[in-house]
Length: 191
Image 1 (tube, rainbow, N blue to C red):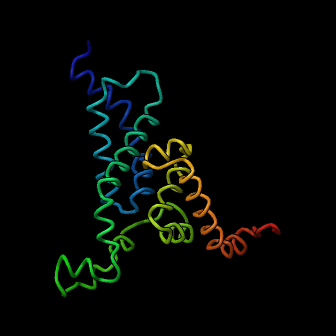
Image 2: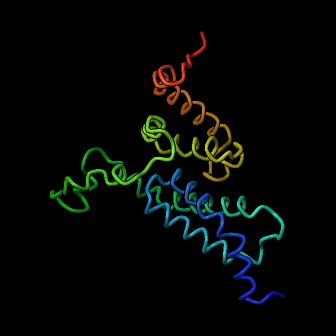
Image 3: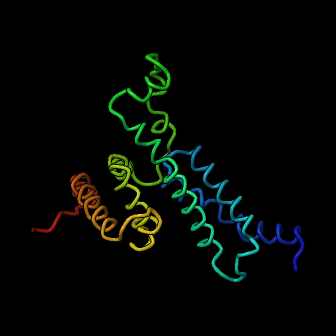
């Protein structure tokens, strides 16, 4: 049985080199530097707490990314009711919380602070997608999860994941068609 100090040294040696990868994945999920840092910190704490269950010699990066993704999904599920409240039309949620006074400087701090990891056009197109569509695109296309894994992660049938992904890709294709044609000379094939 290894000592606590030895376990900590092993964890630091194997897990800490993957912090940049974890932060990149967290930024793709959260699209906010502060939330991404919190998500990475939460994932690392969970990983350290479960270090005794890590199988030596296996892929530590994949293990950490799975913990990070699961942490995000758990937070997504907890925040679903909050998002329903926050997605009310106009300034209604802000007015309900803070009254009629609103600081215009804080209108969109996420956009002001986020340094996109994808191209500006792609990030903008992703940001315009509804949350349910954006989540399946990020999990399936950006993180490479299988449809079944995505379905289990967000708690819906595989068919729903496939449908959302199909629709999201179509929306992205339409929004990025001009950009792809001008920047990369990619044109849509004749239907």
